[in-house]
Image 1 (tube, rainbow, N blue to C red):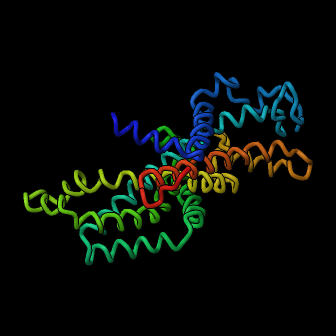
Image 2: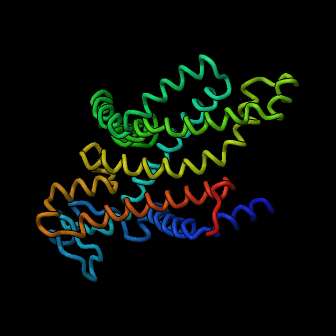
Length: 297
């Protein structure tokens, strides 16, 4: 308990951490209870507004081309965007941590093989891979039905982002594992006959968690940008709108040429704010866990 209090005191001492947490808590609240905040998701059928009406007391963020309240769409889109980003980040961290630990612990040919594969995913931008893979997979499995609670288009985006953005994590975990495997507690575990799997899970992984958490926040920010870009290009699901889908709809409706700045600006600003929040939190976590980087806030 004392260690947790000490960590929170050091972490919250950074102004970036406080700012990022406040913005993130607001977005999570939007995603957790959209119906309570703005009512049910508006559609073209139940929309009550007019075509691209500017912000007013009735519609605080204006309306879209179908007369739907943009604030309603933003709040409901928060859940889709955050769920995609968080779930894909979990997949990315699991793959990156597994590859990085195995490469760093076993070394030799295992390290060479895994790092060459990591270099491939590291050199080629994850967005480019996702852009190529997503439509192919969607064409194969179709857009109808339900997969693990997600519509196929969202499930494919989650899977593709998670499986193409792990290289950064793998390289960091490998470098930390190379250092940890030479520590005395690992040598003692080997002498006692502990299996390699148990050493990695019980001795190495707990020591890697701080570094994984700090870099995981940065992976979330990248996942949000990737999902937004893919949805903007039409690979999202219009039935479960995300912020990227709203940007795509705004572009198709000619919001920029017609001066409907609120339609483009609101979802774009949300993407920037959430991404920046995770970056600030990640930097604060890194400074807290790494004394060498710690500076006076």
